Length: 508
Image (cartoon, helix red, strand yellow):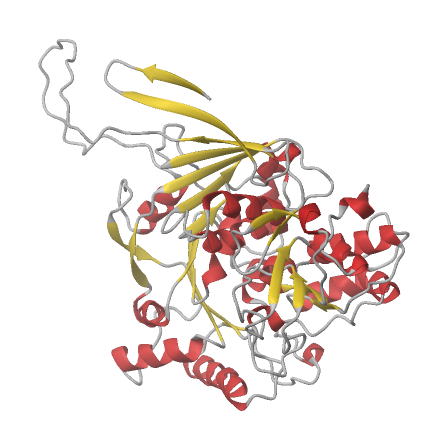
């Protein structure tokens, strides 16, 4: 343990660098550093050099350094500066809702604003059916009908409808999982405020914007006013450096972080991700990183926009945007540092996302199935990663392996995009050769259970390795089911052995 004291003429803070073992009983080469900046709460007087008399300033208060999240909320609330804990009315750039929460939000909107009220801006509301779609459940089907009726009534510009449940390809407007569709359709832009009636709305923070989930009541209010009352969160900064090993994915990074700080470690806090490792990640991998901040209790996650962000957005939006970045002297509640080059493949054991373990430590855990899909692990690059493992092994899976592309575009990529280094084969060809289930219709699928006839739902108390985001009892169906959260690499490796498996067995 080492500590150093840094002082100036008016302030002093202690910076502590603490090296700890990663987490397991076995030896691990991974270590992290947590740095806290402690600010005194006492009011002190500071002697300043004598100066010649001058008139008082009339230009307002002195500017205080701010974090990215503070800057975005300050701009959206038309405030010159903000500090954590302040409550402000924020202008919303995009509001998203889906088939589970849309009907309730619409009901509150009509109750409070009137049956004939009009939404604040029909072009800033995005409505995406995605949760309970491919089912015979009448109530689930009715929810989509309610979305359609409301969008017709309000002339909503961005409604990604589905009518033919028997063939999703017959519905050109249908997209699939809302968080991935928001990005693919150009609704995610740096510096903006995006709200959604879904806890994983934080995924969009990968674009350098403030994105968070809200409830139906707040959504009903936003529908009518375009505003929301928010408390400014303090920020935790996660500095991730080092070359990313070729057997790791962003899912391993966020499982490491959640395991470190726990499922309540970031409660109502912003989680800002920086460092050379983060800069090297693709947009889809950054989305994975931000997607699961809510599993640590985070209010939002955010990655500074850069050339990777701008390139992704080039053909997706023509709406001008203005990125913001944390000031060099911005105040962070805590700072965590990670050497990613020393990290190993991870899983989160049942029944909590913070029950972190090395994949190799769980090699004796026999599994019944593997699930690859969801907003966390059902993107194009997630399937490319899984296909890479299957192709490298040349073997067939030993347990049922379910594949659910997040969106219609991802589904098309699975069937049409060659997997790098695999002789021109597509994901679908590799999956078929490996004995996986045929890729299903794009939706949230069994990630959150759903109606009993939902594809790949756990209707029996089985053990599943999944690329999804939560493993609470009953999350994917049966309340006695056991879910091991993992990266697509680890999920594919586990499918090949029938046990929780470190993907290095096939990738090295």
